[in-house]
Length: 255
Image (tube, rainbow, N blue to C red):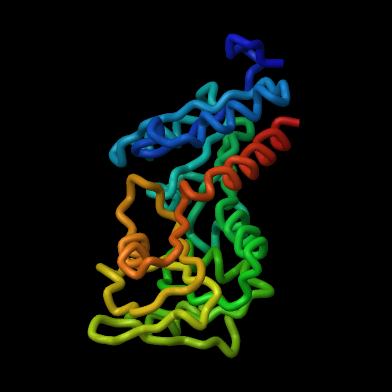
């Protein structure tokens, strides 16, 4: 077990939290508190990694003492090409937010989207408006069984191709663009996974409005939600749920 001085032994499982501003996040501290509380010989280390150094850092994990890593939102699409093995969800969505070292190979998976889905269920969300065709959008679409989802983007052709790639049938696709007035008030939740410059065309938001951006990333949705006095929920607003799930996966992987 980890002692009260948080000392690391040769048997300690080391997990990284990799992000451009990892040290500014509470993610590692909350996970370490759980490890210590439950006498797990595991420690998470915040790793501030610049974009230019990301590939080198993760690929060299294979021969390091680090047993895996949580990947912060800004790097989730950059991880996939480094992996040796990955889940079908990772391959189809094109993103990875948790990495496990297995021997001298790296296996990747997605856990953030699962946490988001559980959060939506806990809030009683049924009807969802999702904006964008990004990797986050793909992951959500592949796992959104039980939700009524309407899809929005400024490029209808790209959106239709997205629904075909995700093998979605009888879907509600809609254009959202500058100069329009878009009312999301009939939806329980809005998920913004887009690359739109702004959301000024939105005149009303839903009861709950999510993106998975951390506080160091600019959020168009947060800006618009503040303007419209609507509820915004980002990555750091879900930190308790995210760290709880990360803890379970790390400890399970260590047993």
